[in-house]
Image (cartoon, rainbow, N blue to C red; front, side, top):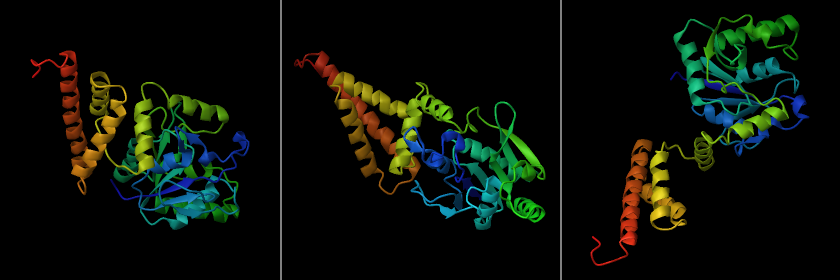
Length: 291
């Protein structure tokens, strides 16, 4: 992965949301801005252009001039604070943006002869606020536009993107889904609770909330919870998984994320085997012939 900085635009007026604080709206229990910040967590410097607010990780704050001056003015403010050769540019209302899309955009810029890579939505439209750009061409074109028009305030993004050599990156169908209206917010909140994805979304949210960077085999833990609930008693499921987590934390203190994940899996296997032995004794009625 090439080193990069990130600029997140979070200062719009949200007129179609009645002036609501769009970056602070929650989808799946997390603010939209925090969801975007999680997708670019490995950026060297992350600049958020907008009003200051609590965030899930440290960022550098700045404001466009004038406030509410539009995306080009916001980019002009943010670009002053980056030092990497490549910058990721994102809007703050992307609930489903993921690390894979970010990597695809950065890789396209790193390996190609382009000046930027933009995500295309399912209808083939460019999304210049889900994009990665080479910093020097971006600075150049922003400076030229400011000179030509006297200011970047109120200028449309297409004036910038029309001057850059861009590569298009097709991402997942939801990567560029943004929340411009209350209907969009409702759709995002409903989709995040879909049966097929709700567990992954919940676990990702919990890990973010707790500051945990750990890939765990959820199937192992779910099997453990099932065995404990069935073989012992229903309340045993959450209590057992808690104890497994505690044991794994003790066993892996100071270890790498990979070793920590292995510790969780090992503790889960031991607890699952115990639950199955408990069930066998229960089914045998506790007789003397039970092994």
